[in-house]
Length: 316
Ligand SMILES: C[S@@+](CC[C@H](N)C(=O)[O-])C[C@H]1O[C@@H](n2cnc3c(N)ncnc32)[C@H](O)[C@@H]1O
Image 1 (tube, rainbow, N blue to C red):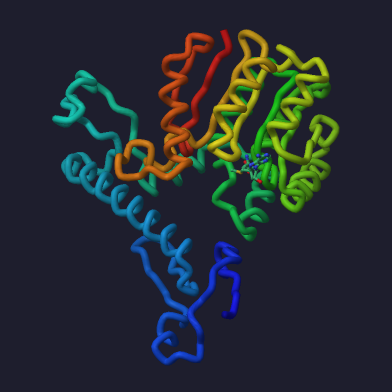
Image 2 (image 1 turned 45 degrees about the horizontal axis):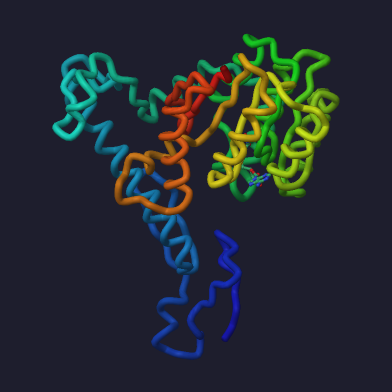
C-alpha cells in the first residue's frame, strides 16, 4: 500500500486509498470545503484534517450564533457586543445573576481592539513571517502579548520563564519588556522554530536577555531547580503541550517566588472546556487543571478571557 503524508497535518501514517481502484479514485481526489467566513481548504481527505475542520466549523457556527443574538438584541442602538442579560440560562441558575457579563468580541470589534494595541514593528514583522509557517495559529495574539508585557513591567520582573516559544512572538514581547539586566529562560523542543525566534531576538537587540533552552520543558525546569532556581523567578508564561501543564505547575510553584506570577495560556481552549461533548485528552487535562487551580490555596487565581483564555496564578 502506498504511504503518503497529508499535506496539512503531516500525518505520515495516513494511507490514502489505492489509486488503481476506480471505486477509490473519488475519495483520493482533492476536496474543497468551504466554511462560511473561514478560508476554503483544499486537502486530500485525511481523517485528522477532516476532524479538525469539523471542530473549526462547529466553533465558527456557535460564535456566529452568539454574535447574531447580540446584534438582534441591540438592533435599536446599533451593534453592541456585550450580551446584556442579568438572567442566566436555566442550566446556569446556580451561578446567580450575571449583572454585567464580559464583552463578546465580533470581528469588527476585534479589529478595533487590534488597532488600539501597541505592537513594536519587530513584533509585527515576526507575526507576518509566522503567518507563512505551519502552526501559525499557535502564536500568542498581539493584545495578549501586550498584556503580558505590561504585567512584566508592572511587577518589575527581572527573572522569567517561558514554556513554549514557537517562533518567539510572546518571548520577544516579554524580552522587550524586561529591563537590561533581565533574564528569560525560554523552553522549546522544536529546533527549527527556535531558530526563527533567535533570529528575531538578535534583530531586536534583546538576545542577551533570553536563555533559549532547547528540549523538553520538564527537563529544563528540573535543571533550573538543580541549578538552585528555587523561588528565584518572578514570572512564568506557560504556552506548550496542554497535557504537561499540571506537571509544569508543580515545578513552577517551586521556581517562582511568593508574590510571583504563573500564567497559563489556552485555558478556555476555544470553548471546548465548556462543551460536555468534547472529551479528548487535551480538553480533559485543561478542565482538570482549571478545577484544581480553583481549589488550590497555594495561589490566588483569576481567569482572564483574553486570547484563548489566560489563567493568572499569584504564588502565595
Ligand atoms: C502554542 S506554541 C507557543 C507559542 C508562543 N508562545 C508564541 O507566542 O508564538 C507551543 C510551543 O510549545 C512547544 N512545545 C510543546 N511541547 C513542549 C515540551 N514538552 N517542551 C518544550 N516545548 C514544547 C511546541 O514545539 C510549540 O512551539
